[in-house]
Length: 594
Image 1: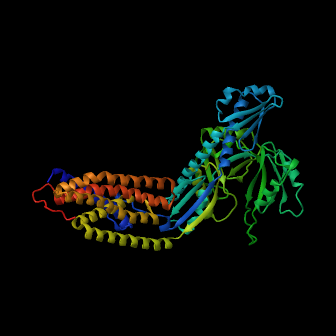
Image 2 (image 1 turned 180 degrees about the horizontal axis):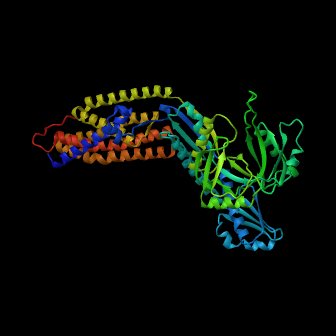
Image 3 (image 1 turned 135 degrees about the horizontal axis):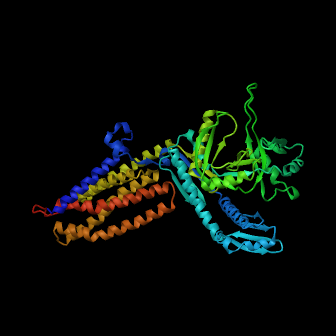
């Protein structure tokens, strides 16, 4: 017998032993029941998919329009700052989603918007220039819009993945489907559903905006409130600590935020919202009165704030849980990076004595008065009073989402379903039963039809299943119901290649060739037929994996791994076993049982 046969025996034996070791954690899932050796070197195992273990299936729609609008805002801030550095007295307004209007107080300053300035803002195209009015019309480039849309989806997927990983969900499926993001989270307990949905859906868009306390706009619109309106008017009076300047204003309040939003949305004509301002909303939660059992009524109040934010959460360097020394309530402390620190110092230094609204996901978290210039550090209070444990958990979750980064645009949940593990287990039992029955039928057929050669095919099939399962375990793949269907299919595929080879060997034997020569010719001449069939199936599996989602991907993964291991066992290991039977030795049989 050739020396290479022994090398092959050692190699295939080592691969089989390693495969068995990788499957031990899957067969014995309890770590305490496995030897210490396995706990150190072999810990990965096959995971159960969403339909087997239960969990959440969520579909989110990304607000692409908001992402594009935010990009245009940042470009507008940059070009406005560049012009002011050159001494231009310019104001900026937005039109629609993509347009920016620059208005120069002195039309002669329009010349300062030259190629040198525009070189740093190539995403904006100049549409029109009116020297008489001193205005320049800029528009966001259409190609850049498409780039922002694509990058927003990709960034949203990575941000969601980072948040889910921090939550500890094993084998999540997070994929893009059109402008939607599909999220599948297996193995979650029902008590975790609301928390994980809150973490995923939190946009974590942090903005700092100056409150316009000098405007009489809110007073004017408050005078138009009907008597039967659910909205009321309250005084908003306060004194600056430094200088003692008196601020006298009003704010609108209501139990339901939607009532306030509808009121401002319906204002038209002279009462319409100025283009550079917007209304911010803060939920107020008064402290409980120990003298009464009735809980305090929460309400929403309004602030008139600047539409554009000069500082955003994109400049955050770190965030952590901390505690307020006066109220003993949990809060979130944050640190800005170098650029954020400079912008915050500029914003607060120019607006000392004014209120600054801290806006998180479109909701004002607090609006403290700027007493002095603020730089690198700040804090976010959670507002109100309540269960300390729940407040602490809320603060931890906020820290997690701030650290993972803000979503590029808000998410809207368009579909949600919960999959229970009980239904999955019933389906698993039936699927496994069908796999066992199919395997038994294939084994019996091969033994009856091909006799001793059929035994070799059956051994190759069992090794194929062993290798395939160990590879799935090594990559901690999730097995779904379609994945089990892929296993059933692999049982049939495992002997298909052997049948092609065996029929070729039979043809060689009918031509009067010896068993050894017939085996060599059968494997050599059938190889490319077998290889082409596997490549065709492999391409189909790649397409399923690339464009499918969830269960379809589970089937594709099982199929792809099964094709690779099947080619290995049916061509190389089967031939090695035939070499053992007909081998390079004088006692080789004169006939072949096939």
